[in-house]
Length: 164
Image (cartoon, rainbow, N blue to C red; front, side, top):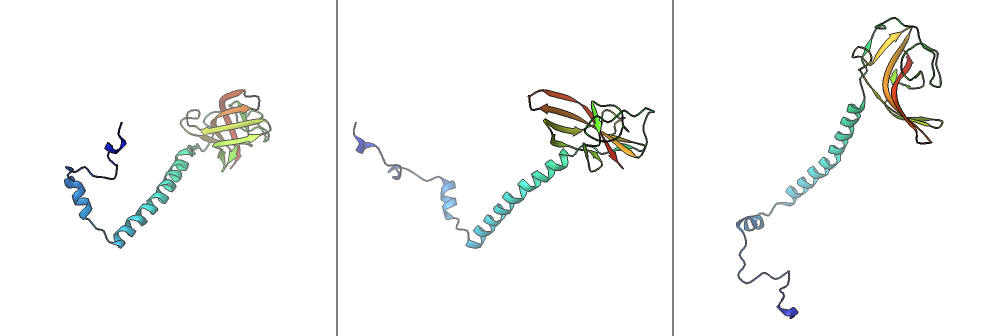
């Protein structure tokens, strides 16, 4: 094998002809101002587009915050069984004032003791509303995944009992 027969990647073959497109691109000589404008537009887009995505994701993550102004049914409040709060709401696997955030059930992740919680507010349990008012409290519901340090998991409805 003769290595001198292999052509160099930098050398153009003797019978090569440039394409029409390449010839036109080589004729274009943009000014420095045009190149600078292009770079600035690219820099702004690369900065603002991810920011727009983050804002839209945060807005999409925030679940429903609609409510009945009074309880849609009569019930006897159940005792709070989620770290704190008096019994004013009913239903749910856990209920109490601990999951309140901005007067509704929190969304996202929280942890306490050996438990981690991921919650998303829902509108499927209270006549297509997320919350209802009862005796000066807002009872707001969410579907919550609880994970203990042992790895055990539980997914169920939880109720935040928030002062109005």
